Image (cartoon, rainbow, N blue to C red; front, top):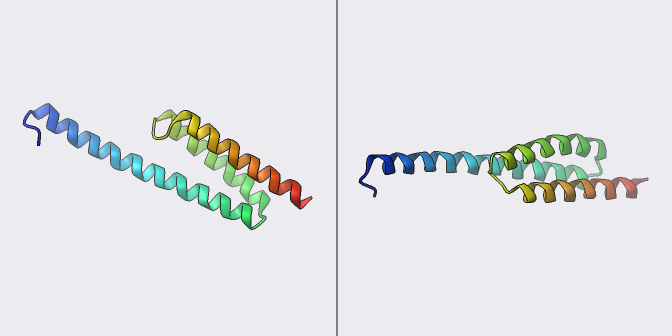
Length: 91
């Protein structure tokens, strides 16, 4: 355990931020899971609406360094690709 006051504070701040980031990552996973479930159930319109919110949340998380910028872009790309593929199959 740290002895210096600033180091003790730094540890507390890091723990707080770590917990917040963990909850945000968990929230992202939940939204992505809901989106994938909508795609699997052929609810294309619902999936497109969910994609908008997932896109916004992923970009916001990337801006705040919760996830990497390229990781967010890759996930958005794959999800939109998946929706478009499913939509084309339905037609």
